[in-house]
Length: 430
Image 1 (spheres, one colour):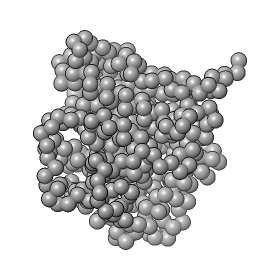
Image 2 (cartoon, helix red, strand yellow; image 1 turned 45 degrees about the horizontal axis):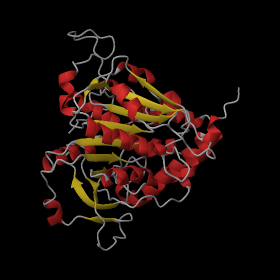
Image 3 (cartoon, rainbow, N blue to C red; image 1 turned 90 degrees about the vertical axis):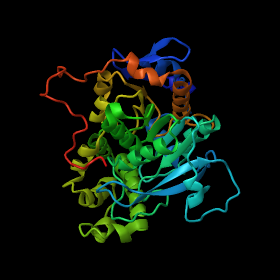
Image 4 (cartoon, one colour; image 1 turned 90 degrees about the horizontal axis):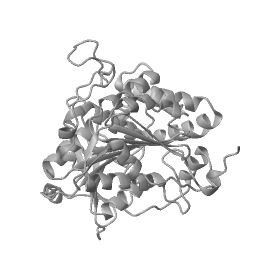
């Protein structure tokens, strides 16, 4: 029978999780499984029926939309990483003010003065959200502001870690970001723990930022100080998602080509620095048309990968799901034409009691547009984060959940040993 539910905007929502999810202790005194908590808090998915498939949903992001106004002040951090030197920019959400616009930065963004930033520390206990944007994006992106605006209006603090070279930030070394560069996020979290010792920290990543966030949470494991994290439209397995783009004309000529063009624009802003790496040739970059070609001539030579496929496989976050030890929510659309359904690690979510995956059969990539222009996923993740903070005693999480063993490895045995954060490209975490 022909399914006409899309005519009313109804998308099917599914949840994938362990058969024995962690138990959450509620501040009201009761207890609830993490999976049931997620199912209760995620609202029904109703979308704009005129955008009735993943392509239409995704392409609608190209329509100009002012989005909610969010004001930022930027601080430039000097990296403390032993190998990943240079600088990176973090934008902190601030109340609207009368400062003069800075034409060197995105709209509604200005720099902190040194004096103001030196005095940013606080003993308040407001929840704080750390955001990671998508490929070549930044704090200015509408999809990100649709999450940041309502959650800060509810009393939260928030900041955005801009990937190096993005959001009109400058780079001082011949390196852009990549899909596994968790080190700037790690340094930001360490700063926030020092500057705001009483603030509970939460994380959210969008697309490539979701991949980075997932890898970070896994690398931190039981030591992760984030209370909870959300990954939206994560490409998960970058090699599989890459192959999915190659399979169709629209995947190649629209999505891969658009992303490649955006990265070439990023290169143009920073080429003087990037070309200090003798392995990168300007003519090779100029000949790029598609995303994978850019990754081949920039990411490979920059990081030492022999091929773009090696980079994709090494940076993917599918295995990382197994190492997560905080309440973790993944939100993906099964018709996402960029982060393909074949790349979603359904089985890994079934193995980890700390992780729940919410998928919809319709919604595209960072889209899920509703009638009126709002995005369902933004409403869903804000509801999840606020309910998690307001209703759950996250300090009691370890008291109510014994250590879990992921996979079929017997506890106490040294080998065989599954290390989901083991990488072929060996780089220290700090």
